Image: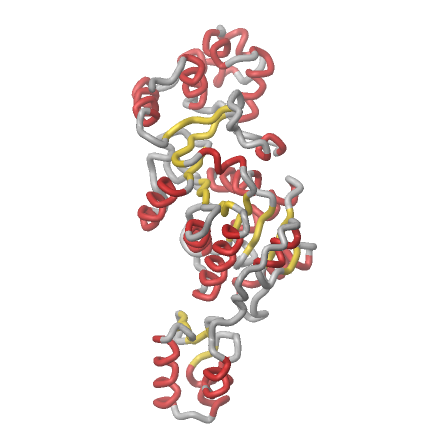
Length: 361
């Protein structure tokens, strides 16, 4: 069905270069409707926004981009959600800089349900990815839609976990919805479009610009009741999402890790600053009053395997190289390597860059 004139006016304004969410809201406050904004003259517009942006609104958007967006809206599952729609997420209206319109591909009803953000490092460890997927699947089963940013590492694992259970997953992206970034997550993006949702405040054709991702992060936290950080270095973008969550009055949770891992330092910093330390998804569900019993995932290694394996006893839970493992266990390099290979094939141990090994749970 073709969009009505009001929707077209929202889209036109969304395509105007330089018209920020705050500028858009100023125009709405002054002129009430997007149609009135599009019909206003330069002098009227310039009273609310800068001269250059006022001139851009008068000129209107690139006709080719407008046409491409209208064609995109004709495809099943694609729509725009605006301030004027009942479907606009109520939680986003609470943040300081809500976008006037959202591009949505998939199931828009997910945007207004109970949701939890799960974020972390792009360069995640295998253990971190396992944790993110397990937490997300159990939280999804417990009633929370999982929101993340479609990045590699923790984000991707979180989406996979959310999609595997009842409440599904939403990806908030930093590009137009006609672009999948990173391209390696194309199959995951298609799955999200079919079973969950993809959301962006950026117009179609917007490429992956570094400045857009912090803006994207405020929506990841803004759509959620809380934010779980699984792994994060001290300079991680995940900490930006956590900071937005705190500013927006959301709960912040962090998974602790090894004191020797740089990917744990961001989580440990959050915990020092007051984030809630979590060891299982049950900790989060109980925080929100959802006392749902979930599977205990603290260990997937059989007790007898741990007891019978001197290499696991020597490894503990921190990454170690082969020489250190041999020194601790008293095994020869050949024997230790053979045991490590067996445990690696069983999914008990992971091989890390730099010749180190780490227990996976």
